[in-house]
Image 1 (tube, rainbow, N blue to C red):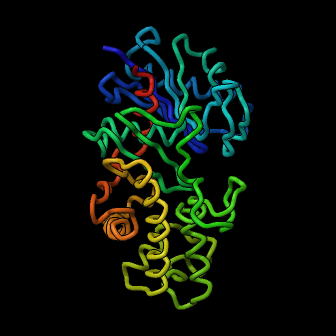
Image 2 (cartoon, rainbow, N blue to C red):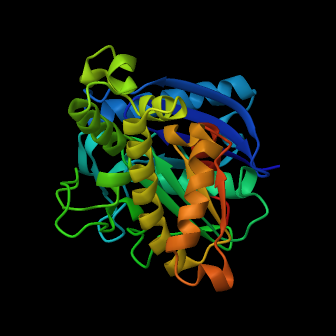
Length: 317
């Protein structure tokens, strides 16, 4: 049986696991990401975490076929450099070649959201589907497109950034420097900003009490919790947020016609309170939905394991 190391690198945590060729995690280990460290030092930490997971499994590096990593950026195929990972302070760094100093096996690096999508498509919520799109609703809007059970990201490996497609012409500023991106309206960060604005305008809203009157303590769960209690202001915020989400996803569906859209990230924990209205709005705003329907809209189920599994399985030919 072949074994792979899957590494999910984030701004907060390094997660690594030993994954079988069937996509099962045999052992796993995690550590904090110290983004203040120099690039080479942090890669060494990544290596240490992976070797700890390997030790737990009882295997050695000679039992490993390849190492796969998911990172919050992409590798430029022209230069071989990781382009830009803001939360790690990495820009144009030789990640693959640096990792190869620690692992005497082939190393593959892919965008972290694409890896999570692959994990969900192979062993998670979308197992059994050939084609799926995953959207993660967190600090930003991550995305992964799976075609024929493989990651699709364009001819130059830099594609599938659904969060940075345009939703509103000259709209809200996005962290990428552009204006009106899907991410600026449909991320958890955007929902928090929308909730703060609404709560400030309506002091009687339950949202104010739920964050102790301190709007900087607002989180993405509060507007949903207040809406479930019938708070009109929160209901408007949540309704508008789902409108934005549906508008962006309708374009993705029209372009790729996936069998399923997987919703991940923290907001996906709202379950059917989010997905039920989202399906209805998508049916109303997606091209030809009355004739050909819409894809299955489902919640991710692997959680943090999706990134490990997908990172490892990108190595499988």
